[in-house]
Image 1 (spheres, rainbow, N blue to C red):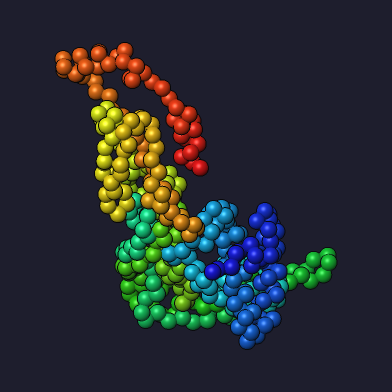
Image 2: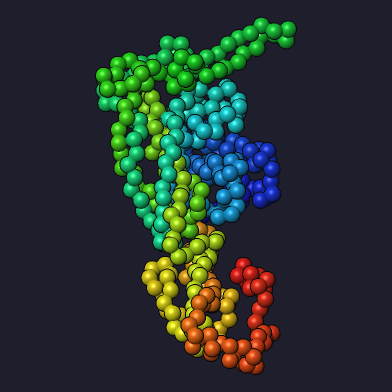
Length: 368
């Protein structure tokens, strides 16, 4: 089981954004490879801290993690240490300031950094059945990759360092500052030669089929990440990510509410009086339910475990069947005479029992 992100950083779930950032910086400095050369355990802790901060350091991701746990990022997130060192240095180098490498942070102590490509965003529409069971989708994506035959040369402005140093005379003395090289964007190298099908950055567009594993229980608007399937970056940089926004198709008879499903069942007056056996829609096929004689309109039947699997792995919701007794709007002469005779019959007079719950009690039960 994956370790809790708050536990990794050593903070409480109520910690502020500043406290989370401070805790991550402390962990990353403690386990940084420059301080722990050749220590595989320290490197693993370094990656875990970065993984935790990647989620908890983002307000939207943190909210999803608090609600759904690790499963909110399955099917294309980290997947347990999926972030490599270059990912970490590229994304979070600014947090460390001058803790390592004389003002730079990238690579292992050097100033040069690998450029990261831009992210791509797509939408994937799912049926209710796919949401309940989980699914693997294959989608075609047009993304930029480095073209064959591209060669690079060292940047003449920063001499391959990725940074330029500037010395300024002030009233306090000589001040030295370092900034990302504007010529190469911090990559430390520039294109030397490129084929005709490549753009100015040495990239070309290709169509690629990407497999996306979507866990059961995802919701409309949720976003999954497929690492390194976005646009490539020049100079063998780090590819961006493919961000997958979830959309859901409306089911003809079932409505979703959280992990529960709702089904409206309409029955005749005769079926309500005499009882009946009805077949209704459920995920995975039809199910048959028995209606007792004298069933009341508004009755809610609960089929446990027939709803949506929890994305947190806490079992499945229920299928709630709402019974609606259909009152005929038109009657023939014989039918009308029958009901006129029964109008004053004592057996037809409403006598709600204590077990017959009010509308508000039914709503309360529905969400319990």
